[in-house]
Length: 239
Image (cartoon, rainbow, N blue to C red; front, side):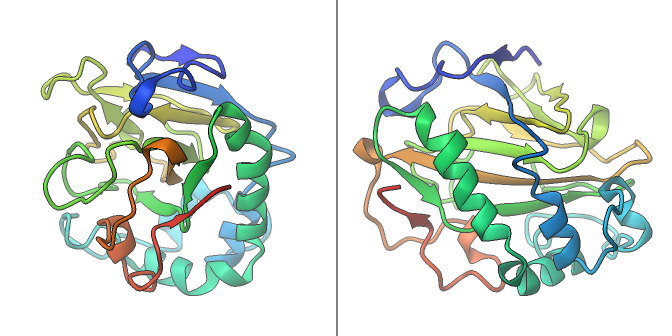
């Protein structure tokens, strides 16, 4: 899929819609902002373990990945039980402070607990292609998605997006380590296909909302209905 490279394409738009650059890849310093050590710790993996080989330790346990089980794998259960004790959230707050907040002219609300995605060979990361505005997801209309791979993401193990705004032209967005994809998941159809590569793709994603677009709500998003986090608020505010 066609992407735009740069840093400030989306801070000028009203209601967080990425009219002029629906897909954008931003480079960051992997040495300074590396989340992988904390994820390895949470998943009980040795230092330096190649996360693209995660399937060797955590094989697929479902015959089919669906919307009901795509966040309920053994990887997710272990991750959400242990990640808060690893230093991950200290680094996450540093990333928000140093890299994310400066991209916006407004104060922002940030997703409190980033979502983990696991795309193992032969499986899928999410059960179905969708827009975040689809019924049942309960995501706020002003949200911008930051999609942060923890492995190289390519071919059938990466995220596929229809940048045209339609439903039938999903294209792969290849993103290498040290880069983050910023895109309008509210408006753009996105999903994945069965991973035909030999590498697991592990990624996190989180949503950012300019405070001018933030809506107070008691509704829980699909993200926050995951095990271990269903009783926590969706967003930190005024960061």
